[in-house]
Length: 268
Figure: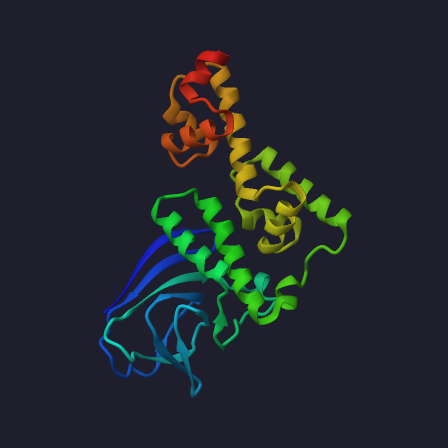
């Protein structure tokens, strides 16, 4: 039995917890997928056969899926396996893989930091973390996995000069000051760069992620409303772009050390 639990679906990207409970034996030939994905093995072991080539996959490896590929999965043990899958829209694949729309066919080694990050990403998704933060982390995770095959291709299109990188970071800040709800992909399209490069360049230039900067802008917009005496925290959370009132309270307290209710009393 194969089951999938989606923990994130946003901005051209989906993260899912995939569980396989087939007994030991040879799988069915001709299995196909309709989407691009990178699949990180968390537990267990299985053999993937693609184009007549067998690859043993265990928790030290990841592998890629491309639409239309026919494959077979054989299971040497009865214990089954668990994986984390990151599904990607074609445009996002091309932006991450040097303009190519087909991901590599062979296994991808997963160093300890990459392995830990896909497990933390899954945990954060299950816990209901901010979707913008999760998307940025998932894109970075995918890029780090692909770098194990060809880092030059992943780095293709990165702004070459310090001035260009600073200008890119300033462009993000200008855009989010106008509308903090712009997604990472929207910002990347507007600034003519890949989401992956946008995220990395912004973090290198400012010391924080795009998603964290977005949250800081939202928190300051909330402070302005609280200073005006905004009575409803639930309405405030919706208006300034938080997931819900609890999300608003967590972020504002992290930014200021005070709850929104206390800040309303201090500022009004």
